[in-house]
Length: 341
Image (cartoon, rainbow, N blue to C red; front, side, top):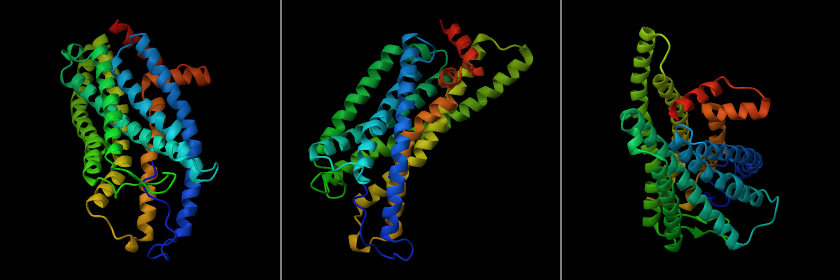
């Protein structure tokens, strides 16, 4: 997803930071992120296998595992295919790929970003329904509905990005189509795409997460008061407490996504509506756009790390696999699952 264009050989005010220093930084960052993408892909495969295992066992929170599977699949496309393909070409670890593979790289990048962002909305909406309407949740959300929603999301992402390509919203910036020029194509389609697939999903997830946080805080106070009065928590309270822990994972992921994805999207939207004069580009602005691009890429790379360190069901499994130990949350997770059978 190379949206910055080739590093410029000249820019204004090089006394702050020169074009050569920017290119040196880009080279170091590409090597580091290439290694990180490989590690992240391994973690994502683990998360996908764990999610499938939970779904096969019909564990509690089926929709959580389903939507997490969808989000991780989108991230895996990015870290296993698109980002490494971009890094190895830019660092010259391999020669430039042909035009068609590079076009496919860009296409899959946008599909992966779109599916991952919308899946995060689904995770937030799923938790919103549970905490807002706990008694009606099972009738509103179930496995079959979740699968249908995920299929619609992925089909829509493939179709929408295809339309964007066919309407030439993205144009190749060089003969091999390694670089994209987003601001010379169909600006209207790109604006619609950026707002509907990139900006709105992230803002929606953020707003929903903040609303759920308020509800969760209220419920936690009620749980603490009831536990003080009644002693040992009931099975219902254990289940509810487990859902609260999964919410904190979704909340952290949402905040991280908003911080990493929104800056570049907003800047690109501004550049689309008011294209800058290329002869007046500042060196520091080029560096800032590279930093924002790397933030976008770090989102998919770090997401699985958040999953295996914060989400109880996945943390328990990886602790057992790596160290032969039982995480304290594993026994609790089994107890909660048993109450759902």
